[in-house]
Image (cartoon, rainbow, N blue to C red; front, side):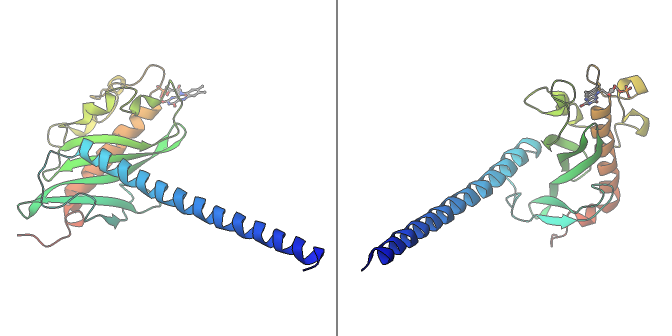
Length: 204
Ligand SMILES: Cc1cc2nc3c(=O)[nH]c(=O)nc-3n(C[C@H](O)[C@H](O)[C@H](O)COP(=O)(O)O)c2cc1C
């Protein structure tokens, strides 16, 4: 083997090692991302849904729905749960398109009769210190929705207090809470007319 051949062999081995390492790192990252998504969903679902046991794991029967009332311009995921083979509750992804800094993605827990069982903010770009009190780790504001329904909270009450509504605004920030309040109201109204698109599985 001459020196050129030897140099080529060393170079080729180096490239091979680099490619294999990159592939391994990429695989590892992919599975970490998948794990994170799964954990976020399970954690948030447990936080917003009524306590079990249910017939199915909430992630098990997820399906997509397209409805402007839930999210303009995109399909959203719905997680129905059944108990004793009857519709029991669901988690519905809801997008509030008109936050201060763009869309706010929410996970709404709703019981079969249309009552909020819990809500969590999944993603948002609101201003830290002004609009981020929608996050449970910053404030319990989001829990004020729990037990609310269209039946016990009339249309005009789905607003911030300074507009005559039921919900607090944040200091110096009304746009963010109003965007969330209205998105939840739209989602509850949609559910009252389309629960058949939530509980799509065979049941008694
Ligand atoms: C740099 C900057 C960032 C702001 N971020 C937010 C925000 O994230 N959420 C929010 O509701 N208001 C935010 N505001 C305040 C809004 O512009 C607005 O004044 C406030 O929401 C009150 O709205 P209102 O006049 O409808 O009551 C921000 C203002 C500035 C100057």
